Image (cartoon, rainbow, N blue to C red):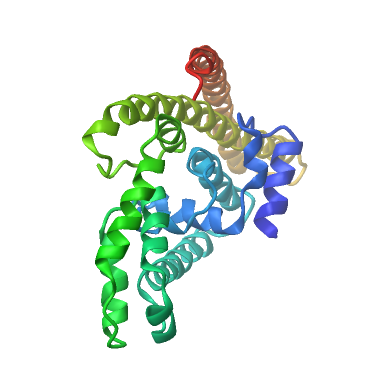
Length: 286
């Protein structure tokens, strides 16, 4: 709820320019997924059910980073990341490998295989389930699973699915049959390029916000030191120190303004590249 409110406030107040209306459908699970994905562990990607999440991760991570700028300590932020990361790994592992005896006995292995295939998963999914059921003395039906998975892969290995897979920044596990893989990969590469261009825009927006926040804090410090400088109680020694601080802060203000100007120009270029590519992609009919 807190992150959701902060996100909504950032967007409504215009602090971040987010180039995707699907951002507003981000859930807490998606936020947790992005935190872990940002650390380089893609194991947990399977628990994210929202196909629009990956392209929004740069913004989500940027917002979490801004919590520190809002006054929340770095120790708290890092601690939260660690705890959420551990929770995600537990959820991911339990979701993949934990099956009750009843589930193992009554499972429709063909249906499970179809679902895994239609999601582009490798056979390692079956391996984790097989181990879980073996603990209950139940043998998983690999033949039924494989037949279902083969049918599911036919659905997954279509150009439209390849495009969506790439557009959401997801990795391809080489699961498609040679007869279908060529067209699938062509569409996947188009989607991946779209994901990259969207990420450029979102990353630039996140960096602009960070610089604007620092600029605001720097200007506040300048006002505080200017007020102290004209105080009747300030000593000559303190006045010298204040003048030195003001010089440094003034220089930093100029640097930040130049950096923001450059980032805004970069974002404009990224947006143009994105719009141009989106127009090209529209003609592909994915």
